Image (tube, rainbow, N blue to C red; front, side, top):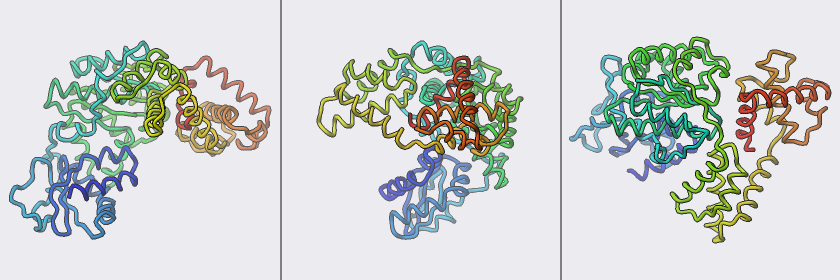
Length: 454
């Protein structure tokens, strides 16, 4: 049975968004296998309802692909497994889950559910501290020591791969060590939006509100900028924030932008983001990047010289995630090919990475990625609209196309609604000026380049 479920999980992992898979499928455990039916163990009743509404048919399809026979699926709450249930009885009758309501729902302590979503190595001890992140690190340590006492809410912002998620997980690990019974809820902004919309569609907003407002002592919300443009989800979250804050519950957010720069967020919610401490996490300097690489190499048994560490640190200056990914690739190549991990090997492999990525870029792809990043449509960037919310993204797209493709100025102008080459030149000059004086614009360009694989 565990083997059948493990194979089904591998299939589901390929079919689902990684965030959704880790959030909703990874915590499920196989409990019993009957003739043509499987009992799956889930953290709580709300979780069971959510899986039934959103993933049950996908699970059945994966089990069919694994076993080549129809498998009925039922759920049991972790810690409430019946001890005398026969393996082949009618599970739907014997283990029916009662209706979920705010008056009856019970949610186990996070050790039984949310803890499984935490990356074990994302602790304070494993976090490399430098000038770029020492304030954020200290603030998170304080929150973990005295949740709700100060720095509430704590808002961490910075580019992709700066260690924001690592710090959220470190807070959770430390809180569980100090206060094991504390109810900690960790989620992603995108997942929260999906939960709200599904709960509204199915008439279960009361259960969702109870989960976030009545069964939560610490809320850790990763990538809260995904609430941008989602008015109903923002309204729900506004009231959730107020109830938690007024109850002295700790709230920690992460985002890729400072609150004032997140587009399409209501002013009253934006003001809540800024009530406590807002901390920027900047890209690490070269010395810190070398330390990150050497720490990772030591942890994973990689023979990494100072020369190679310095080369990689210079080659990948903006993202810790990209930096560690480059080390993984070089180390794997060295191991598989049974060749030394030299600076020359690192140079050849990393140059190939960048060359391959750039070769796949087209002006249309860059236009699409910039529009998605700025919460716009490609047609908005091609339109004659001059409002800065559109004109600056348009200039960023032109800048990136000019920088990373062979498109000529007239070709770029034609892509953006038939603009002249002189108009494109003016836009490029204006954007270069913004990059020199506006850190938020510079960070946006870096983030988009990372999304493009540059």
